Image 1 (tube, rainbow, N blue to C red):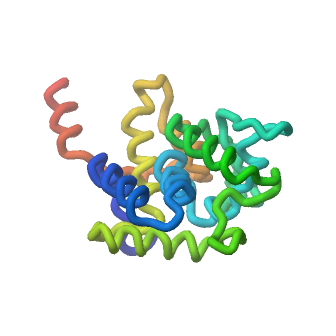
Image 2: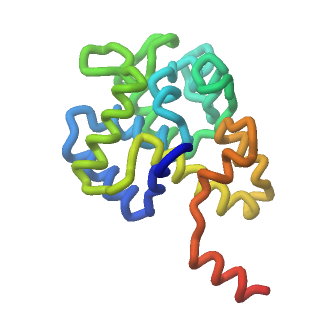
Length: 194
């Protein structure tokens, strides 16, 4: 990422944004899904806009516990399988039940029932963060938050940074490392443990 990186969000900012989406937007359920796809699955704007129900449901239309992102829906052919966070599963199930989509329908659709473009997703996040007064936040903030949190928790789950790299869909671990925000508090704790 050249230039300034998008800022990762704190847990307080995540909750504030979700409350705003729920109370102050025209399509709160769709918008909650879009926000959680960024923050709980680490998807890029292009991937959010390309996401179809076939990527999260079985042949009977039942929600899977993973998101199957094919190369065609990603940047640089970085297809991958991402386990669905329970909050994301909940809202996807609800959206599926309410909209009763066809399998090939895009999950994130505009008011006119068309799929949203990647640029529309980028703009949606930009306006959301501006309304909330979140400086240096963009559509990439959710991805950066997801990768940073995953990196901090992966050893507790018995994994490594390689697993985070695969969840992010990066070809190179160096790219993943650039997304991970440092923590002064964590550095202090680890030094105290030595």
